[in-house]
Every structure is written in C-alpha cells, then in structure tokens.
Image (cartoon, rainbow, N blue to C red; front, side, top):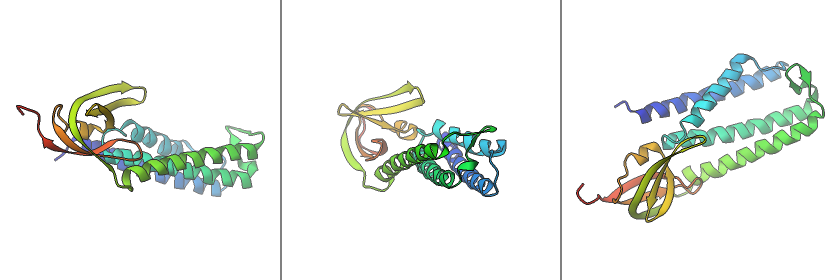
Length: 200
C-alpha cells in the first residue's frame, strides 16, 4: 500500500544513491585534472542532500540515510583534504587560487574527521547497538516547528523523546507503551502498545 512514509523513504534511497554517484564522479573528475566542479555534479550533490535532510524525521530509514550521508561526507572530505595536501596547485576557489592551500587542507581534514566521527557515533548508537527499553504511560505527544523542520515528540512518564513521523502517528496519549530508544540520537524507533487509553 502506497503511503507518504514509503514516498519519503524512496526519496531517501534515491537521494543517497545520487550522492554516492556524485562523489564518485567528483573524484573521477579530479583524477582527470579538472579543477572546477560542473553544474551537473553540483546538482547531484546539492539537491539530494537537501532532500535527505528535509525528510530526515519522517521514518527510521530517513534517519539512517542522514547518518550515512554525514559519515560519507566526512570521509569524502578527509579524502579530499589528503588529495589537496599532496596536490596544493589544484586547490582553487572559483577562477582563482587559494593562499596557504595546505593550511586549508588541514582544516578540511579536521572538519571531515569530525563529521565522520559524529555520524559514526549516531549510526552505531541508533542502528548497531542494542536500543534502550522504555515502558510507561504516554503523557503527551506534540509537534514542534523548528529551524530545520518539524520535530515530533512523545513524552512517556514526563520524559521527552524525539521520534519520527511514522512512530508519532501510531502513539496515543494516555496509552501504556513499550518503546525502543536509540543510544545515538535518543529517538524512539519503535513502540508497542501495552494498554490502550481508556475508552479506545
């Protein structure tokens, strides 16, 4: 059955594949000696990246895609920094050259390593390590519009947990639930209703 969740997950999968393709083509272009990124490569990286981050709170798969993009982007940044350190003459900005290219290569490497480490911790905590088990009565559910999109929250026994849109739609206030919480992001990734709310 076609649902909005399925649509958002399909967007995440296609976007992730396009980003991987864009990264591969970018490194291939650098290997050929091209100094400027073509508009096609810019689009292959920019628009799918925007799509993934716009849909990241829709489902667990979308959060997984976000973590993978952060890790992939960090590793790519680190690899690019090493390449630029070894080939400082190819470090350009627009049509001009960059002063102190090795200094900026170090900065890019540090930033790339940081992103890769952050994404790895989030990815491992949410999708590899065993999730925390929480049980209790749902005291409140709500949606908050934040700077980077809508966030979905579930309060269990007064403790607030972020979650995804598909999980949010399943939870009912005053029901007693069993929830699995990721150790990386602290998001609720699944719930089981133990006792429905009175009158339901």
